[in-house]
Length: 168
Image 1 (tube, helix red, strand yellow):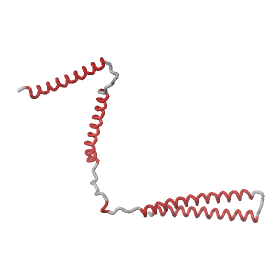
Image 2 (cartoon, helix red, strand yellow):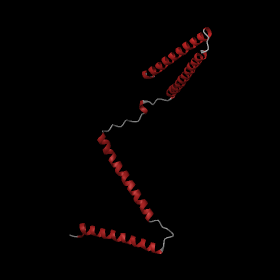
Image 3 (cartoon, helix red, strand yellow):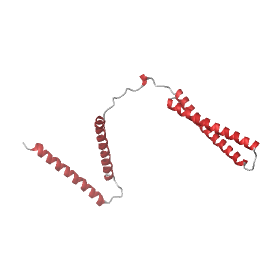
Image 4 (cartoon, one colour):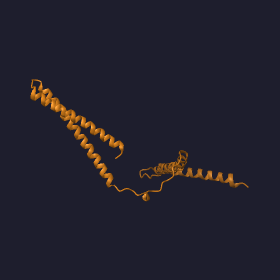
């Protein structure tokens, strides 16, 4: 056990000893008052003594509960196999903050590209979903949109070819 834990247990034990001595003193005083000096207000002394005894018992139960928990933890720690130094994974060098950020940038960019590709695929799947209840006009409009987009792509490809490779 570490010195801090030992010190905490020692303080708990001293505190409980103080409660025990106080309770024993109160009990003895109450016995003496009731036995040798009985009077009409003796019930208050007896109640005070009983209350101190109850507090003492509750505190003792709490200490016992904490002791059992710490005892179980100690036993569990003793039963757990210790890893040998050879079995440990090789340590990776610790990176500075700028190196960590630089290492995270490609990963972040890849995640962003994957999210964008997934969003585009979902949008395209939603756009290309065949609805069996589509009317003939809706089907014609869809075909016209596809043909327009293909024409635009072909026109753009033709411009690029003319711009870079078409002229000598």
